[in-house]
Image (cartoon, rainbow, N blue to C red):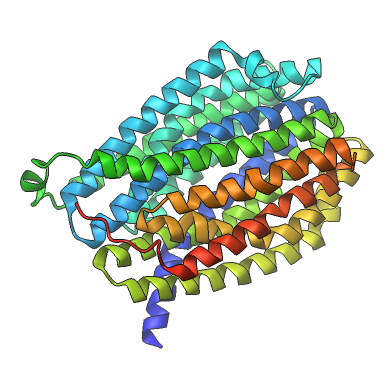
Length: 447
């Protein structure tokens, strides 16, 4: 009984700060959405489509963060501090290089990128303008992602939360000033929202960097001289990183294909899909801490060589996720009629948004379980090839073909298209569960 209590407390110490941080970011994203929503459907659709492309970068840098988390968690379990520090440094460098590449692409070719998503002239221009400015977030997001990973692996998950509170307050205040032109500033519309986000991400990075520098002084470096003489295990690193990056890219690319499908179904469909983003963010945010906790807790146990404890922890985390997801899905069903009323959009867009939210409530538990199993547990052993195969099968074997068939062959409306293509989450979960039970993903990394 005491052991279960300790486990639950450890999960809460890791998961709750992460969940609060994600929900805080999502809630302020909702405020962004509401403010931009006052500008009309074109602005909403443009911001949503630009956000889909920038999400490719976000998931890729998160993939690098996941690799850092796998390595850091296992080396912390083995008490190899120098390997922790070196793993962190390598992943920070790679994330910065990726940020630079995406920033150049978005600044130099914004219309070319957004032309892949929509053919509507007004929506294309709004999306390109937003993308050019939001590219300024890529570098600070890279640094903040790596620092957050380090803090969570060290079971200091509350530190990123404090930084996020300051950043979110900065974002909301600047949104009001820059979107609507207050306090002597000119009205910038959706571009003002992007500029506010850039400033907020810089604030977030600077605060976390200060925290890290203070914490770094107290880290034990006694084994550094010995360990750092050995070469970095690039082959093993690549074996973990490349499947995970491919997985994240192909999953995100699939999500962008979905966005392209919605965008070609019309502005109303694209706007409705954008309006559900804050609710999705809150739902995933509330339970994403379990995925982070799974990676850290299971990873440390694998690092210690405690395989039975690792498997037992995995099963408990899945149960926690299922319970929480079912409860939040019920809440979404109850609030959906009231949520759509806060936007100044056409009645048709409101009706579509409400229908999509009901479809999302049915699929959300499987999304959460996949996040915990594939996104946390299966990755913790470093055998990321399993996750790549699962995502390829779900997104490209089922989701994308179903999206094209339902939208352009059967000519169904957007709520049905969204629900049917989202059934790939069920396929993904079934395969993930089979891999989990096989235990072949369980491995201890050797320095």
